[in-house]
Image (cartoon, rainbow, N blue to C red; front, side, top):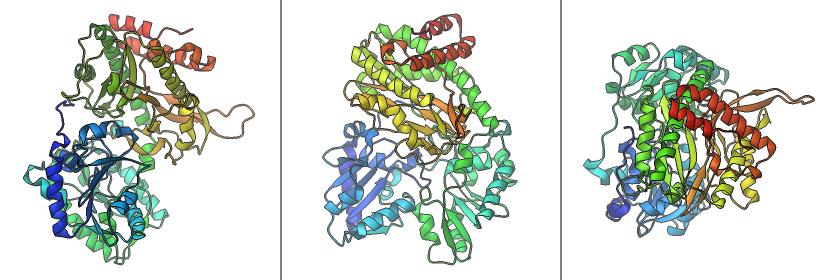
Length: 606
């Protein structure tokens, strides 16, 4: 099994750990220290050795930051974690602050006096984050100091896990769709056009995509932790632990790049600093450490986005073909699970862990599953209202009648990455559940049916998913959609459908469509499909080139939760057409019993 269900350490040890951290702060002359969730690679998912925030606070969410002052401390989280954080964190040690309403600089300004000093690890914060914070704190006469050694690591000591050293594997061309040599050549040509001599790549998924390699250094993400220097001309250099590069990977990589140990990176930065090269760095994804190493020398830092982001997001023909195949395979697995759930849940014997294990087992039976794409969110009743809920042996709950069950899961296949959420009625749902579900469904359909001009950004589409909820005085506190990799990260930028989605959507991008509604202490609702951005015909008399979405995910939406009277004729037609497509493509993959269940689950709603 790819997922474990042991209860993570709670915040019960936080008080002693924070006390030890404060002792170190005092010896270093620091009035506060920052402890982010991120690692050196600024990824959403981190290796166990980088789980500093969880170790210190007990909070296991995928985003957050702790600020520890001499006598006070706070944990900053966004709306996804306002229910989860108080359950995991010692409230006597950390106060919970919700961003974006709560601001780190405002909190520090309130807690610290003029002349105070805040310490941070330059490896764990992007340059943009530190620069913005520095400007804000200067107005309050509070300074920032980059630390040479991470203070949490010092307190953690010998109990800290060792860094991962899992093998790198080449990603076959039939799935990648383009040779790494061609990707590198195109990137180098773009650098020359922009008048740049080199780019420093710091995101593991960018490096995996560029060099057509995959790894397993981070749970559920097929990436190897590495950095790379790519010159505008000549051979790139990749900095990776040599123990990860076995014979097959070495043969593949040696043709593409010089392979160096991570310990050589600092020396290489010093050498680059002495040259008059124009070096591209992304201030939003690269650690502050790189900027600090290159400053005050002859080298000129050119601030620009990671040049792999957009090409990686625009899936090529092989990747699109693979995604469609992967979603048929995965849709059949999810449909088998939903049929099993419908048969077994009324008994009252199922719990969240049993359901999650069964889903993973069914996916494993495809013989194509390489990993799950994230820990399955298996939330019964009130646990479904925790947006990023992770079931453990402590929180495990029975699936009870007259409640909702939310299951958000995904798979990593060589030909594609999947992510799907279904909300299921266990027994008879209440009218309120049906009404709220249908409002969420209306938002989902609005995104799925959207036809929009080229240049449209995710922020422009986000209100489509919220309009029906807004009209009822409701909303949800997460984005409507995130980008998806091709056998890579399940959360891939730069595209998103959200209030922060400022990147224009382009053909070939895969993105999620997942509006929701969450009633704390009662239930959660989310309906998620993955969609592919493609070109659309311009309507008669139209003047703009248009785009649309193709829904990739194939699994039934629970008809028992749909109030057809709240749907327009157009919305009802979409749902019936979608279910007809699901039945037509998934039924041939199923056995007789599951096929019969699917026929009923996708029957036309009139």
